[in-house]
Length: 255
Image 1 (tube, rainbow, N blue to C red):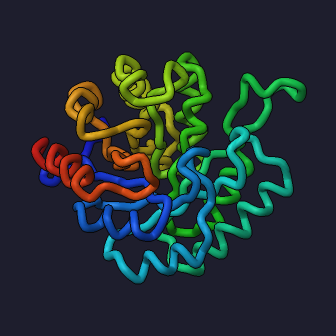
Image 2 (cartoon, one colour):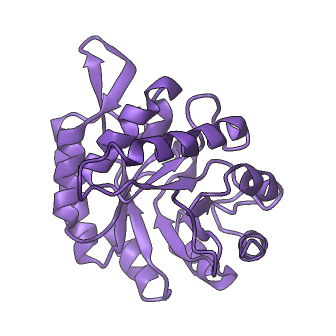
């Protein structure tokens, strides 16, 4: 069963929408940063100059979002070409990993039942080389009854992890809390069905994660490898150092 390191507890990843927030995340004890822009859109691709600025100031890994628009997770060829060029530019500026999720229509005229676009996701992962990639919350568009097949397809693409709130039953992890145990059970059930040499992705729990609810989440999702939070408490897009510390202290106490 996938689990965090019992010596250190689950990792804490902080979504940062500017370089100042990245510095605050590192000060608060975060293990990793997800760099993006535009909180109201759920995160979009950052400018490489912001990544370079941040990398010069923090000692922890910085993963970068690849998301050219917030309409959905279906990207046409111009969008996909933008994602490829953005990946290469961010890679050259020192990105430690990448966060994206590409879906495709299963019915040409209907976007309500999308599926994982194996071809496009795999191409981006190949471009990323040895750098790990996280399947973004596009996973939350997949119905629960299809999680098993989705987890296998995501693993076959080569993703190291999946960022999810727990599926389509809510926008936040707390709203989906009763589904988290099912997600880990499903992940366990597919391990034996993965082709040889293909590793199951780790699960990153995100979506409204705060110090005020992380205890409930860790009780339900005991096998999450990483918890993901924007640590925003002041109505701005700047990470709250004290909130990061509260989150980190709770996770450290799980050892």
